[in-house]
Image (cartoon, rainbow, N blue to C red):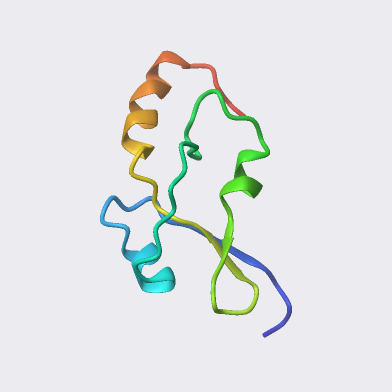
Amino acid sequence: EKGKKVLLVDLDPGASATIWLLGNEKFNTDKDLFDPEAGSEIVEELTVPTQTQNLHMIPFSPIRNRNTKKLKDYPNRSQ
């Protein structure tokens, strides 16, 4: 309403926000927000628009669980 932009990140393994906002649309990507080898550009790459004005989201990714486990190998990652 005031022109502010919102980014919703769906971290829920049930993908509730993704399903609610995007329906059954599938996002096939081998990239994930928690990929320890990804750079800061990953946020823009994973962001998708929703039908709500100024609301964008990063949908839940099934590979997130795999990448979260890999993070333990990168204890000093702070990007």
